Image 1: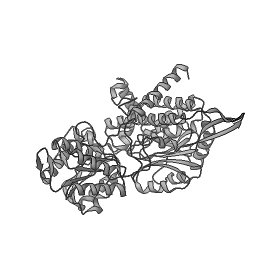
Image 2: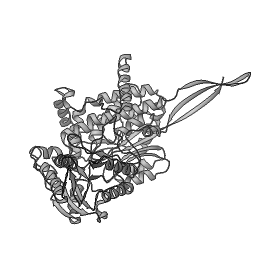
Image 3: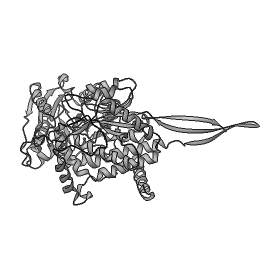
Image 4: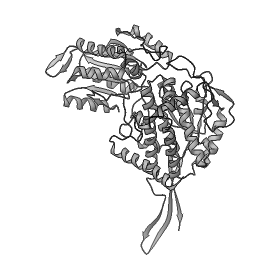
Length: 552
């Protein structure tokens, strides 16, 4: 790698470190598709179409035991027909262990160069990744492009930069001298960050890159090898990422098995054998709370989990109800609620909601919210592009199953998507329940399911939302309140259970969105997850500082 190229990569890291400290808006990889050239979209689509129905040959992993694949597009209902090399657990572990011996000795700056090089290679495939994400997860194309491309790469860079800074926190060596009267004691001391070993990243089906790359890059920059275990229904997007990481490793003369893809099938999962293997020391996990609890219970592992949460919205008072319901209707509809940040529970006081000098009746507020959700879903242009498609058929069954749990205010319907008439779609179902129906709204109902909960007053709304977050976890919380003193009081109540508050969001910013280099994604302080993208602990727990002393 040339000196100029190395300097360029160092500039990228330095910019990212400055952004981490400033917490203001920064994006190394712009979210606008036009930023990547006029020819990029067509090239990405051609690459996607060329891969369909063929083995994925981009990985530098040799001698697979079989080629497997079971991805089906939620938009067409047809299998992608892509197969991936599969390996038994022992082979993956042995190769990761051997590669670890080289990778842990690789200087931090060289690791950083390799990983930035990988991100630059991934950038050239953002559009292929977008189509791969769209046709495995059901996200709309625009969301697929942004979330799995630029936003994911910025999250990877954030973790990389955080790790790079932490690894340089202390000097590598010093001469230590202690005066002792007429004499002194002199020692040469060295300080070395020692990686923990093999890391396992367990991906999810709805965000196969965005949720995985922070852990992958955090482990790699700190000197650990990584086995990436994607969801068998969403392999293609993260396979591209792993392929480019391997290519960057190979270019530098480093064993490509530093980062391996571990593909399995729904019928024969290898997640538990990998997670329980004694040589796996670090686990990154995104998914259900039940399996996340199992991951956290494993002894001898450092775990970083993002599990399920019950996200709430409290409406106390507003400046403009129309602006509020337009904002939250988009938030609940985006990707059909298949986001860990999507709001589910809307707490509205039966006494109504203040708007300026007037009080809007509860029924009027409820109707405005339902009408806004229905209007977005029924909009011929906005509806399909916002809601996308349903990744898992089980989500549709879940929507049907909740109909008996409360009064149905808005029936779910399939969307008319002219581009993909066979798409598996579903508009949000809206149910009204009472504050006494805690057994219903204390659950996370993953998918396009919205619950309106009538409470006595805002005080009860806060009490219920706080209790849910403390017992079941919450990743987001949205508050609409024009009383500054009350808003501050509620914010303090929610931060006591480690939940971030989004106050009075309207317009083109939604509670679902967490900005890289600025927002912490998940706090790690409640049952929704034990880790945060990206604070220092997210990287520091992946290595250990060891200090040596030597007499002069």
